[in-house]
Image (tube, rainbow, N blue to C red; front, side, top):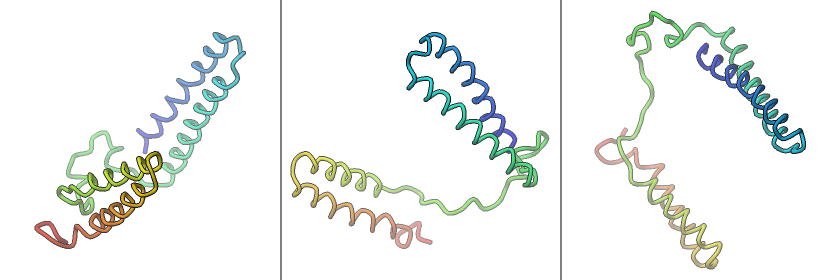
Length: 133
């Protein structure tokens, strides 16, 4: 987790001077922008601190070893479906539901019905066909 920790802490170090520059440039007259930048810097500091503390408790990963080989990280990464058209149909039904908010409830209901069918197809697509588990 060393790389992730450094990434977040470097971004914290970046946003602190950006906040100061923005504050001096706007003469501290825009509190929303300064507040957003301060909160962004604190978010990166919080995430970096969490990763640092978690990384101290866990053993080194193969990614953290500078002389590590690809074979060190081999193993099962899980099951992934080969390809699927179902997310396209799910997105289309979501678009119909969104358009139904502007056009009429009848279109929203059609989109919701198609969305339920698309979700069911997406959930059960791994249990049939060529790539079934």
